[in-house]
Image 1: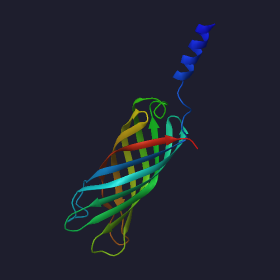
Image 2: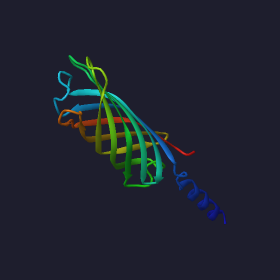
Image 3: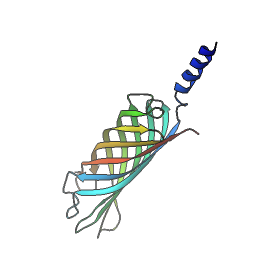
Image 4: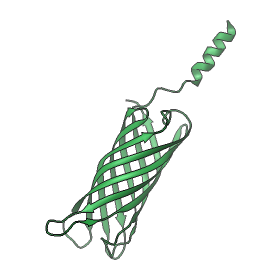
Length: 178
């Protein structure tokens, strides 16, 4: 009888916590602009990103990201990105158990570009394909994410211009339940 109680206690302690329903992701970013569309701004930029994600299932998140990018140089270029992301994890335990958990991500985004010396802003569509991993060791969870962006900047009277870029994020993720 005592063995059964001890076994039950150990088994209960081994059960992961209830799966979180939300998460917040925050990271500084490095950005590489693969075109000279904003020259004389540098092609190397930096910024910050944050996302609020809903856990549709333990393996699938729907996120609302907001990103800021800055490309220094003789002419400063700033970008503000926002939209919707979908994130697929290969394990349902990424938010509850310690370990390394890879994921794939897809985003449908918009970005506004502000160029020093020009009034107003330009708006472009931005499709993001990325992948990364969550490194969880309770109580901390870190992540790395690398994404490739296909973005097209359009003007009324001019032909649209492709502005692809890469971004690397290294940040923190906090998963919780409401």
